[in-house]
Image (tube, rainbow, N blue to C red; front, side, top):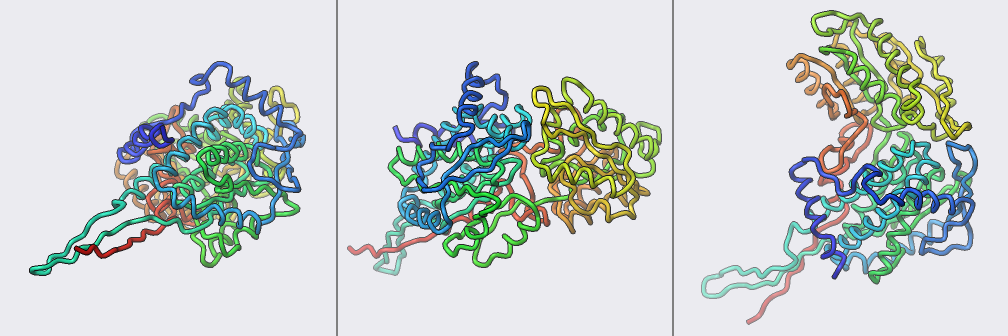
Amino acid sequence: MSFFEKHKEKLYEAMIALHRRHYFVAYPEHPGAYAEDENAKGKAAFENQLGKPFTQLLQKADAQTGSEVSPYTLQKNGVTYPAHDAATLVANAQAARKKWNDAGVETRAGILMESLERMRNRFFEIAYATMHTTGQSFMMAFQASGPHAADRALEALAMAYADLIRFPKETDWEKPLGKVSVKLHKTYKPIGRGVGLVIGCSTFPTWNSLPGIFANLACGNPVIVKPHPGAVLPIAIVVAEMQRVLQEAGFDANTIQLAADSPENPLTKKLAEHAAVKLIDYTGGSAFGRYIETLPDKIVFTEKAGVNSVIIDSAENLDPVLQNLAFSVCLYSGQMCTAPQNFFIPEFVKEGDELISFDVVADRFKKQIEALVNNPKMGAGTLASLQNENTLQRLHRSKQLGKTIMEAHAVEQPGFPMAMTCSPTVLVAEAKDSAIFEGELFGPIIVLIKTKDTNESVSLAKNMALKHGAITCAAYTTNAATEAFIISEMEDAFVQVSVNLTGFIWVNQHAAFSDLHVSGGNPAGNACFANPDFVNRRFVWLSHRKLVTA
């Protein structure tokens, strides 16, 4: 049985979910859904890899590179990876391209589906690798780098597959011309545009990379995966599994390659500027993202930084609202691209039939954050650890920006006394103090901004999104007209709005097969996970004609 026949039912289910946009998961997100011994096996596999060369990749090199440090122990992980120069990586990809593109849509889809199944067998190992490179908590690392990343990969594959079978492979065409006719046999073939480069980030090394990887490969393009030097191991495990499946299926393992590098000897620009690299997926800071977007003769898909807003207008009860937002602020210490930063709160917020002053709302919000941070069961696990020292320094510098009503402090991380874990810093600003809040403050830093009314709040949030980009916007209101106004205004800035979220759903979360991640319409990024444009720009259709003679 071919890989495609083995997995086609799951692929078809994903395609249906994309069309209907209902709840669908291909890979359960809770560790309890997996075999009882998988956690222990995954942890042992991770620990056994520490301090050793990563030999699972089917790509050989004379040199090794590696510089990962665990945010929990502040010790080097000691894992090294094959080090290649840019020219070798590109040449390998070019050599693999023709056979991979000619393999056909079903063959490629089957290999990618099988790759996800192999990845699924290593979810726990990937989780520990993610935890000790990004600083995520174990639960987030398991979900984000395992099931959620696999779902996003399958989402991109399903979207690509639907576009790639849009036309028939062949057809007979006949044009009547009176007593005679012209007959042509026509074939239709999607052709990948060329070598793809996927540039990863330090905080979500698989979740942000797999959509581009799978979209490229599904469309017939070989891929070079350039992870952030601080978070290599999680995606290296995935690449190794994919290379094995490719080799088993008779294809060149170099159809996908890992391009590990170091801060001292970076590869990214050399790869991005190479003439043979035609497609680039990038996740990371805005400055480098703008450079990627200006490269000539490239098709680029970026997710950069944004300044995400919360607009609080009214609520029947503010407590569940502020509880929800406190969790959103603390989750992974604000190191998510979807995390809220700017909270626009008018002089008076309507709670039920009462008017609550800005200062009271700010104080209640601060207490909700403190309650979560100081919760012995939830605080440390929710905050997890800062990925690197730069975020910690940014946190300390933020106190100089304006009035601070809650200062960051260390939070004990059980089992990891050296972990860089900090509570959020909460600043207060006036609407006129745009210099404080108009840039991204990456990490657990939020600004409560006092406005004269909701109209001003919306205007500021909209202008921030137009100027600096935004991926999310949360709005709280009991008034239907106000809700419609907020959505309409934020639509002008191409920002998606989440309204009145409370309980166990947060603005940070985006669900594969249903939610669109990043709109692609403002400076936060020019691409979206995963709409048709995310896949159909990666290939072109060619049709060939042959005269059919009598």
